[in-house]
Length: 401
Ligand code: GLU
Image 1: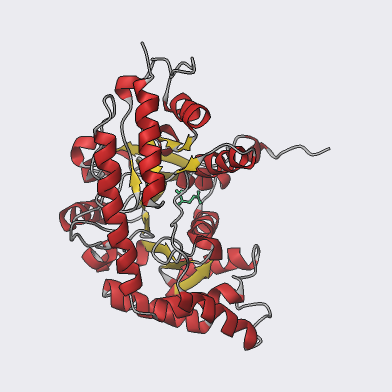
Image 2 (image 1 turned 135 degrees about the horizontal axis):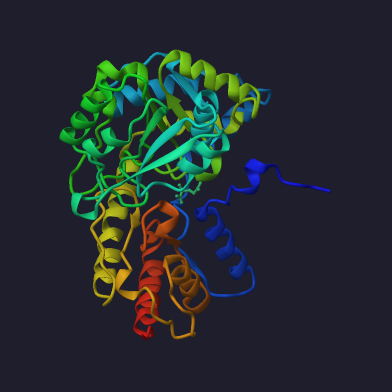
């Protein structure tokens, strides 16, 4: 009989995936669910990507791929770093993974021993601590404050560094808050890292193109090139190119780390689907205008969603600077009762009640280490967003003491 391993027994399904699955289930039962749970662009993948994938098959590239990735894709990624980030990287500093998630998995598996610590500024994307725990890592949270714009303070990071610290995880533009780090923030963090030469940095930049109000993403590697042998950049095709289902992520880092990650990948997935790699080359080589157009749409939807949320009495909502999530606070509503009679003890109960009673799927902030909040993805159509906000307003109006 199946018995889960001890490690898996304590590992939950990520809340993002769990809420999306629950929404799908209810939809299949005929419920009129609007899902704002998953960070899933509602745009089709670029036409060039489809053509690139087809060309790959027609060229007969259907055998096992090289584990680190196919050369044309590694070259296109190197060119991306040159074009978008002003960074010169060599091909042996790069690898292609099955989504950004596998890059994180590879890095943690390659580097963590039992009891090693991973610093994760909160709010954080659900999966960093969960993947670290898969390899015996101990997540160490540093709470960011809303009044600091949800940006981690360098001195707070310094305080939690110990001899067991292996990684600091930075994810900016941030999922779930949309916070962006400015040059001064990165310089302060770099100064702390210079005093802690045993700490590596995982910089997940998957939302780099989704920045608003004329802001631009800056990478720690731009600000602190002297730390190059300790910085692992994670990125991928999912968010910027609306290619979530293609599962193409990539990593750029110091050669010994990338080599170790390739070894992990050779022992797990044996590389990434060749069609998806062909499609990714074509998408990366296309004019970046398509990505910019999607960003403008997200910026417009941000105004729509934040404007609507701010009109709902009992919710507070900061303006996200990037990514495509709104992250309203719920503290004024916790402990009260929904119209359907559910006690809203915390944000998990709130998200559940909202799904059951108003058929809007979101993710509770506590899954991101910072509640009571809700994360709503605004990578959905205007009509869905308007309807979801209307339902949320009605749901909140129905709440009583
Ligand atoms: N990054 C996306 C999100 O936060 C995808 C979900 C996942 O892979 O967990 O919704």
